[in-house]
Image (cartoon, rainbow, N blue to C red; front, side, top):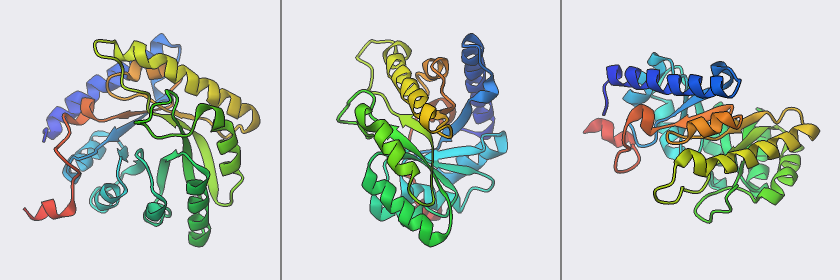
Length: 243
């Protein structure tokens, strides 16, 4: 695990990259929310991130998010991985922004649970912009229909779109390979906003391609490796604290 001092150095580098990319695109650094993805890393590193100023933390797995949420003070949480309907109860009511709504049945489940909890569940619609079978998300052609459907459900607020583009071909520049996919998501978001002004956010871009994402209008970038180093071998579990 990297040290808090190393994390602070990495944070300076990442923020400098975001600032430079935003400046080149005629945007402001503060228009882009940095989400630190702590997947597989222990909660101590998540707390160090919050203490360093990375208030927004993301996780891929519900179980890992719930376990760390109890151990990290002052964070705002994002679920950036896939969500199964049987895990909805573990997310709703915990002030988690779900980035991965990709089908009507999941939207229905979130809405029902939010009604039962008497809360508002914030979500993003995930789009498979590259039609990649290895990635989650609805089809590009079904995006606006899913947004319209989900936003009309009780206790559900659709605030934007998210994508994870296909892995770039071997030897390709990640930024150049992913930028067309980010442009597609921005175009979809713009179309959605014509009907639904509250659909604002674009969650796109990771460590290797954040510049391309910012250039295409990302309002949220999800950064893991550039901040926290290489991932551990598997998900962090609470029992690891007892070792």
